[in-house]
Length: 81
Image 1 (tube, rainbow, N blue to C red):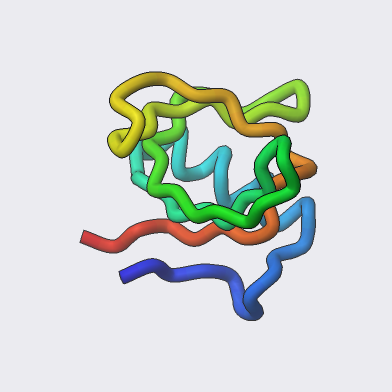
Image 2: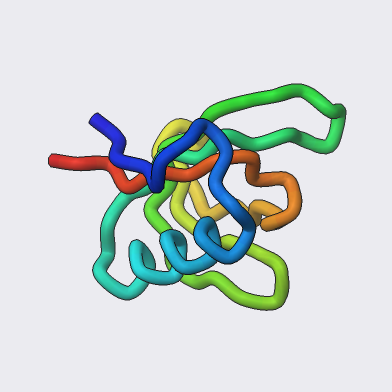
């Protein structure tokens, strides 16, 4: 189950804080994301770093590190064990 910060869409600063905390504490996150084609998608990501407008994390579904632009992340929640 994922635990977010209230509504379906988190504020930018709240999303940034959640992602930074998840990276620091090595917690997986669920993100809602708009890809380069404008399509909404969802991912479970293991954050490695957050900064410079980018979330870098391991995406188990893709089997590797991915970079997600923060302005394209529409929502985020920590995945509970």
